[in-house]
Image (cartoon, rainbow, N blue to C red; front, side, top):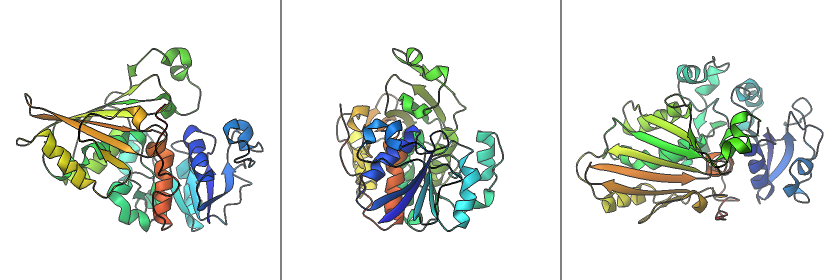
Length: 344
């Protein structure tokens, strides 16, 4: 059995990770760490776990992680980079769900997160944990920066087009919408029920941190620097991300030709479902680790419009973290996360 610990177990991404690990046939949870709920049973905090997992949460000082094979850090951005160096020095494999170890260049992190990185030497050793693009590196990694939710949805939605050079690298636009769990469990006016229900709003236009993460990975695929427009929106639902992406085609291509390109690019990827017709919706993927992708070609403008959908705390966080654990530990990467989503 793979012995695992979850730091930050009581946030939304953390508790989804706990749920998946509790049902994983090859994983044994040995520690759940929570700053806010130390000393309390996880099933008292989240009653849906009663009888399935009644473990008492540790605080960071009392947690014994020495026997772990994998430690998941589901901590706020900035907090992970403070604790991960010590875990790494102990020889533990760390899968970090924050943004602290997703970047190849510390200067990019500092620009978008507004603070210096305290462990830039570890950034050079971390691997970007998007299996569909970095599986071989992930398999050998001791530190994995689990991608963000908007980024996973957007990068995979555009990857085949840039890798095959069929779209212009200029003027790419991503219009993305997220459920409220993407904001985390912390309290703020923006996520109060009366502020969210019956309401849709854009936020952080041209300044959202995930812009830089998307640009990093798409630049590697395109083999040139990519700059794009990314606009996120908050929508009145709990889970799910829908990204609609616009790019100008190079040459003339039909929708059928592009669909075949996507199917070839993702031919061995269980978790990527390419639509031959129709478009994905968030309820097609909610509660799952799938990313669903569909597209259309606007012939008048010679532009492709790609629609991609994921569960933001599934493939956008916890599900992908388990997928990365499976790869690192030599398991079939579908283990424990292969099932279909909720739909309703």
